[in-house]
Amino acid sequence: MPMRRFIAPAILTALVGSAPVQAQSGKPALTRLYETIDRRAAGIESKVVAWRRDIHEHPELSNSEVRTAKLVADHLRSLGIEVRTGVAHTGVVGVLTGGKPGPVVALRADMDALPVREEVDLPFRSRAKGMFNGQEVDVMHACGHDNHVAILMGVAEILAGMRSELAGTVKFVFQPAEEGPPLGQDGGAPMMVKEGVLENPKVDAIFGLHVFPYEVGSIVYRSGALMASGETFRLVVKGRQTHGALPWNGVDPIVLASQIVLGFQTIVSRQANLITSPAVITVGMIRGGVRQNIIPDSVEIAGTIRTFDEAMRLDIHDKMRRTAEMIAASGGGTARLDIAATAGLVTYNDPALVERMVPTLKRVVGNDRATVGSLTTTSEDFSFFQKQVPGMFFFLGITPKGADPSTVYPNHSPRFFADEAALVPGMRAMANVAVDFLMGPGKPSPKAN
Image 1: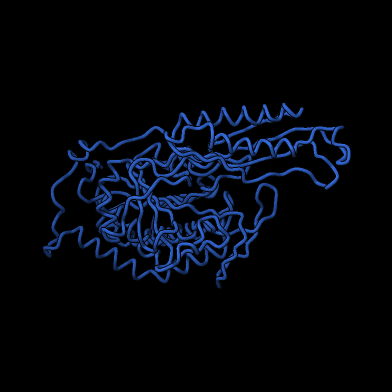
Image 2: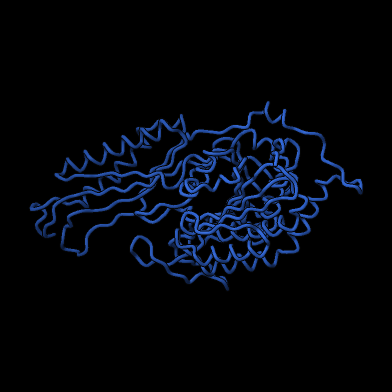
């Protein structure tokens, strides 16, 4: 479990100031801001839809989000927002300083797409290609990051038009490589943190959302652990190459790799205490051999590990290494296992921050449409930001109303589909959490200039 930064309830209580300042008209100032957000979000819907479609049609892989980053940077500059580019390779950070002193809130959107061939029949369907770990692949926004970018571009336009009324600073963080950087490269949230994205000015809290196959416009949140830690593993099984007709003259790494894959499945099903917390080991790639009658010298296996508990995470590492090495040795081969925390730590929502912001989410989408969700074994490198400052991450539903759940394709599917009716609720949610964190009930004490 990552190191956590809590906003203690007692501290929050002490920080609660007086009731919102009344506007001269007698209407509460915050109410006026909420109405402005709603009006501006509705007014730019067509623009945000156009951005989303453009980004969807031109997806870019991790650390290659050059076109997307330029679109974002140009838009932020047009709003008079201070812009920094080239953060963690292709990331963009915008700083909007309000007209009054106050805390600093960060809003994050991820920009990268996946090596997936799109199968959804859309007029803006992706036909893009890219290079992924040395191979040419089709590229698609199969995880919905195109929606995230368009939403945050819209939020930047909404809040930039209100800057004189904002008490504090908003950082817009457009992050590359959430899906993990290419082999041999750094990137994503860890690199953004290393390069100081949460400093100058120092961020007090960070918020992010992710589109997910819940009903369109709904919001799902959870206090504490929400998403699993995600680690990538790579296993190289070494044998000895020989003619396929004479297997006894060599060591077959394909057979050994097959046995290791099956052995990995018993770690979760028979060796991990699932009463403690869930865990997943998935092999997503096996590569070895070039010809049907040649037993190759080696086989490469790659996959992902998902856990919610630190002790279990480390125990699974040990068991995977033991399983791979001993199965390989039993057939005369060797195995080397490498594990990297590329997909994120446990996505852990600060409980006090969640408690404070849930009324905002319910106000935006309705009490019955902002609900507590279950743990999910998907993973997010947003967790690296949460390790440094209090953070809250939530899901935005994008499944069309009335859709048969059995026909809904999940994130990372080539048939993943996002209903654009979620874009306005997404903008309203992110803009409102920013305003309420800066100026609403329970806000941190204003910073001195």
